[in-house]
Every structure is written in C-alpha cells, then in structure tokens.
Image (cartoon, rainbow, N blue to C red; front, side, top):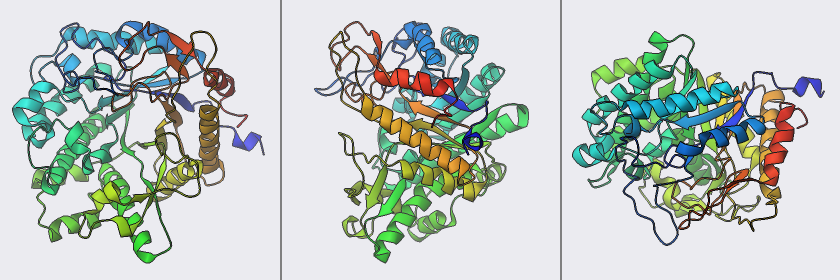
Length: 460
C-alpha cells in the first residue's frame, strides 16, 4: 500500500509569493510606482517600501528554499518594475533583475512559475485610466504579458496570469484592479472581471499558439462553502457561490465560456459586461494546461444572513457564520484539510485537467526572542494534514495533481500589509514599523519540510 502512495519524482514542491510582498526596492533601478508603493503604513500595517528586501537578498532566500528540498518557486513579475508607466517604454534594469532571479533558481534546480499580476497596478494607469475598467489598460497589460512570455519562456515553463482571479468577481476587485473612481456597482464589477478574463485568455492563447513546451493555467481563491444547515435555501446559496466564484472562472479558462447561470443573472438584472463579438470568438479558443488555486480555509454560509436581492457574488460579504466543527486560527479561518481534498477532487472530476494547488498555509502570530527556535507545531500540523489530504485526493479519489506550493514560506507582509500575520517556515526579523535586521531564522517547520520533502513526501 505504501508503494502505491508514492508521488512521481516530477512532483513539484515549492513556495509562492508576490513581488510587492517580497522585493522592496520600490524606487530603485528606474522602477515606476505602483498603487501599493504610495499606500502609507497604519497603526497595524506596514508600508510596501522594503517588504523583506528580497530584491537584494534573493540568493539567501533561494538557498533556504533549496535547503527545504523545494524544486519550484512561484514569483510575480512586477509590471511597474519592467514597464514603469505600464504602457510606455520597458525598463531593461527591471528585466535584468528577473533574469538574475530566474537564473539563480535554475542554478539551484528550482523551477520558476511566473505570475503576471498580483494586485499592484502601475500608478500611472490607475490614475489616468482607472485601471482595468479601461480597454486601454487591457491592451497595455497584454502587451506587457507578451513581452514577458517572449523573454522568459525559454526558462520558465509554468505561468499564471492573475493571482486569485475570482477576487475580481467580488468586492475586493475595487482594491486590486487599479480602479480608483466609480460607484463600485455590479456593472463595474462585471466589466472589470470580464476585462481581466480577456487579458488571461488572450495571453493563454498566445502561449498555446507560440510555445508548445510552456504550460499556463487559470488560478482562483477556492471557495469551499458549506451550507449552515440542511435547509434547502442554505444548500442552494452555497451552490450558487461555488457556481459564481469557482466554476464560472474555470469554465471561461477552459473554453466553455461563462457559466450560463451567471450570464442569465446578468441578463435578468440588466448588468453591462462590455463583452464584444470579438471577445466571444477569442473565448472559444481558451484552454488550460492545469487549474490552479489557493486554499487556506473553508467557510459556512447561512441564507438567513444574506440580504434580500443580494447578488450571489456578494453572498460572502454578510452571509458567513462560524464553523462549529473545525478549529480556527487567530483570524477565524477554519482549518479544514478535508475541504482541501474536496476542492481538488471536485475540480478534477468536473474538468479532467491536472490540478495544481499553488497556495496553502496558515497565518500565525509569532515572535522571536533572538535566541531560541520558534516551535511552530501548529503550522507543521496544518501542512502535514493538508498534504495528506492532497494525497488522499490523488490515491483514493483518482485526481491528477502536479504539485503543492505553500504560501509565503519565508515570512512576508500579508496581502493587507500586516507583518504580524506570519505564514513562513522561516522567520524574517522585522515588525510592521521596525525593519530591524531582516535576519532569516528557520523555524521548527523549516526542518520538518526539509525532512518530509527529502523523500518526496513519502512518509505522509
């Protein structure tokens, strides 16, 4: 039985990050400003100017990943670093940095996965065109994406376009799309989402037309939603969330077009989406080599808490209730490995395309006393149980899975700029307002990963 549960030697283990949360160097080597570069620190958050200074310390960080026996690193190319205005001249110094970073990975036997957009719109495009509300920005992004694909595809064989693409179909869209004006209406949400989907599909089609050895997939923040009760209204509401926030995105990624249920809702409510006949033809050619997602937690939904007439893509704004059956972390996120298995198995059964979980982890509050190792047993248990659940999906349910990437396995500021919400197996010695020395300090989980991945996860 043990032999049958061994993963292939090509299985990909690694770490995922974004440029704004790692690089720092916000004003070096002719980088342009992004919308994040001008966001100030608050009482409980940091600014984005230094992050963990990986721009200058990537060799050290890659050595740590290699020592953990990881063979993939998912990075993001910062649009404003390589094209300062977003739609103007490219910055060779920015491209040179990513050349150095990618080459340093390959030197260590670490495969790059490249993400093209992780929320940090060039400030110029946000201020002048209102971000992805504008077709001009869509075209500028596709131009940037093609340039990066042409330059790096000889070395980077795995790509995604948008991090957590279904966030662009929720109210978070207005924080991550460079949209700085407007009434935040459903029309705006649907328009921005469609514009970003066309960016993804146009670039995926470009890869498939030009690079036979490069793989690209859609990526979303998987919404594992349970109904609060067996009441039909609760069950139906949970089903709607999965349709609008999971299946709708993957349907478009794989050439099926948008969910019929989503399109009918838009028609019934007179929602404008800015879909052209040309877009429809382009969408028919879409395909995905894999389906990627982030997974941290499951959620419980009560129809009683959803305001009457609310759009399904907004059900989670007010409809969530506390889970009674699983533990939670300090931020109330449910720790649910079986939900992870459910996500993998459900999507593989439906699409029959390889699945790739590329973000998984748990945020914890941790401090280092400058001497003793951080005993993060809760993180070890989280990753152990989720990797075991993934293997159940593979060996018991028949899912095809390409790899497992943890999120932020070297501490980085959270997506909301909180350095005190730590996901890493390596502690970075800084706080929200004190950069200290940025020293990298392995936690107990670092040595756990090192041991487990040395044998390709076989002991789990």
